[in-house]
Image 1: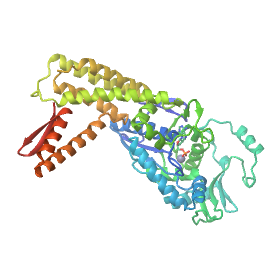
Image 2: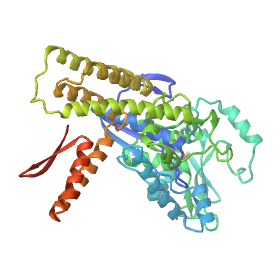
Image 3: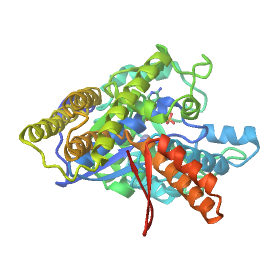
Image 4: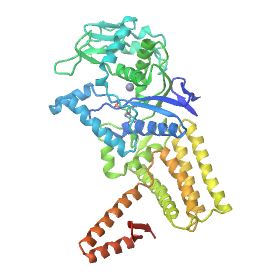
Length: 469
Ligand code: AMP
Ligand code: ZN
């Protein structure tokens, strides 16, 4: 499997530190509001990548944080007249609901920055001791000049950056020894949440949080670090500097970055009025449609969000679901376990070959766009090669392949059936209730209604059973 590594700017063969295991850290959202559909992109694409690693047999330790102390959270708290903790807690819960609705698996660990402060104080102390950081008036800065390879990830010319910063000197920044130095710890302002430290009552900088959480849950060197491309500089550059200087070993072997999501070809922003939360979208679409839409582009390509493209994604999802439901119904028919003939076995084998094609696409830097095309090819193949009178076992076999591939993409293709099943169970329970009350007219009415929906009831000694006819 090859991954495009932002560090080397090339596709590289993926070799994990420990065979069969993958450690992966994905920068999570700052929780001051409902997540927007831009935030959903890294969640969906890296969840899909994780699912693919698991499909390939890797044991994945997937860590994604919540940034739960930050200027924006404090501002939202002041505006609402509640604590920053309350804001963070509320939006973490909401974010988890959105993730579940998008079928994004929970991370192995979702650390919270505020619960990792002792680790941050420790790492900052070590950086000061080893000469990589210095304190001025209660603020601790990382000394970027002390890390020889600073700039290696963003491939930036540091002298240009430095002079740019000098022109833009902000008040209070004069105490920095170098304009590229960044904050590891800052003193609190009036009314802000704070923690005690050797330097001041205050709070950590954003970058040190991720370095410490990655170290705590994954170790000094990790396989993959991921996030949106806006994080390359300065966030990830700074994480590398901190972690490498503190731990004395390389930080992450592979850096993966998703490109941005735009709306109608413009940057999404509140001021342009083209800002959508995942919750907004869920009112108009099944979030599986959003998921399919996100996966229809390569994660490193900019992706444009529009109603037309979402409608196209909805139609595509419908196409997969229709095929899957037909296969399921065919597979549930009672045909006495009719054996597969030679041509059936050939069809099954050909269907299985779609898995290899799918893997080929995913092995090439998680090309979900092409992997999805393989799923559509399989749908077409199933529609033409599994006839309405095909043996049930053939339908089940082809459906298995389809379900496995869609599951890697996190697409639920038979969810409606589950909903339908519980609806049927409920109607049967109602009919039983009616019979108990000797309301046979209602019981018969329910039976007829189920029959009109293709469900036949069988009253057996073990209770009521049902089947599709
Ligand atoms: P934030 O809450 O701003 O720290 O963002 C959380 C994650 O969402 C980061 O990985 C960002 O890079 C990513 N992100 C934010 N906006 C977008 C966007 N419009 N398109 C893609 N990713 C985004
Ligand atoms: Zn981070």
